[in-house]
Length: 264
Image (cartoon, rainbow, N blue to C red; front, side):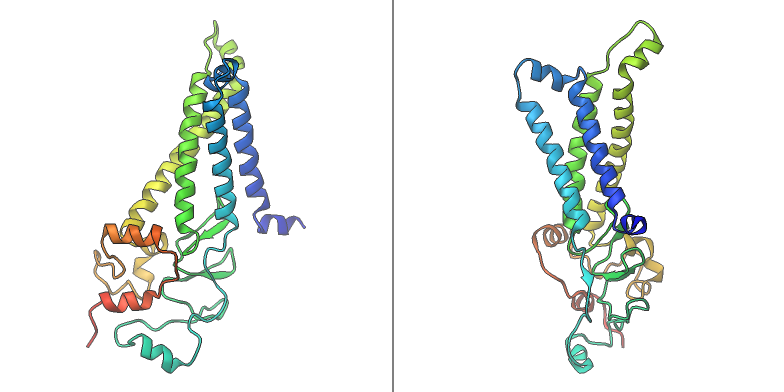
């Protein structure tokens, strides 16, 4: 039972949710700007902050529980002749069968040892959400990071507004202890969210995944390309448009073949 709870990410998600609401409660109960607005009867800012926190939690669970693009069957149904007619084999690396789940991997897919599945356009397995980030949930992962960062920065400002002066250091720590703890947690998560959001927006803008960026020299369809060459890059605008606005499964083999010089 306990092993199943760890495997399904129950404890990670429960800890994240509990921590979120404990910090939110601290910000509302201490003498912060939120508390002062409530006392004056100005409820707009407290309600907006509460709704932003709720939205961040909902997005967290959506990304965490969403199918990231698991490969549950062979990528192309039909004969090998049909595959060869669709994708010229002279220039495109042959699709391989996964050594773990024995399914044919589409290009840019990778097997995740934690999730026990191959994932389309695999980016990475995120321990924060206890799920893979792949073709189906990557855009929502970035939206979640953006909303989470806004909530964290707002919480940072609110926590700082509640720090009260005291006559001695010991009294100051006793009065502001919970707020200081909230500041540390929110500050650390803010730094992590900024870094993750910046890295992912950069990689999306060049149509590259974290796995491809980190393991380029070991990936069959990239290791023979030049250091600056990316066969999936269509330019910043097109990359961002396709990523955020086009919701479909992409045959990356065809994109690769169009943008890679044919071997002779």
